[in-house]
Length: 312
Image (cartoon, rainbow, N blue to C red; front, side):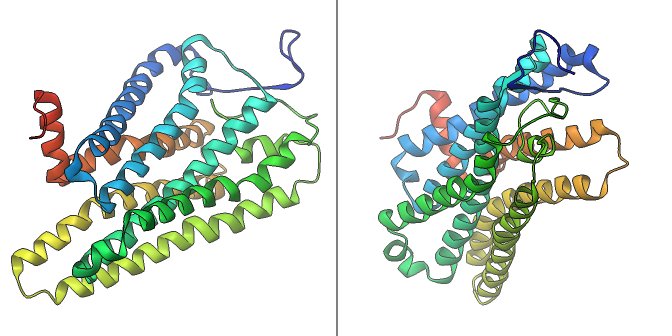
């Protein structure tokens, strides 16, 4: 039963069940992480745009990854902080479906960008002399556009039906942002397609991407083992460490969230909710840190940026 002040054409978002009294305190680390994500990824995008030494395929893909992380953060931040700060729980159907669309499409985009970065590394290490002729600017644009289109187009089919489903069950969602699987369960309609399509889509995107990335790194290791110079071998491996770290962070979160939803039915609800927040916040938080620590060009760019020195 909806309260009299709640519109029938809206849902109610939920923060941390049972911890509503502590929402203000919980908002402090959330806000700190959100600001860190915005600053970290914003700095990466700015550096790559501004520093001509970073105008290479590897860094273009990194800028796309950082841009995707920024968009994910800006998509979830308003409703999460609204719930935690001022208990603003109501969200209209239209705004909810749009938020779900961007959240899910950007997750697929991120997986596609990580796949593109694996492609970049295998070209750079397997055929270094032909690297610039294979990965031209136009080729990088095509690969990047492909990753974006795959994410934004493939998620349309399960989102569109949400607009015409009737919602006669509870209007209370289980997170402080809208997810397709949450909204779908509240519909009083046949949701078979909405149950099946995301499983197939996840298999053809996340699972397949992960397999191809794994295969590409096996090929890279095989190539690196054939390099006679120890210094060159270490240099080649070092260029892959950042990418492998980002891949592990992202896919461990995907696997963790999947296991919690599929096999953690008896786990406390707060565990499910917390895992979802970790999934959406941890990779965007870690990616700039990983690349700042492991990539000398990024380190030098950050030092120049904050010391006020411009490139000669």
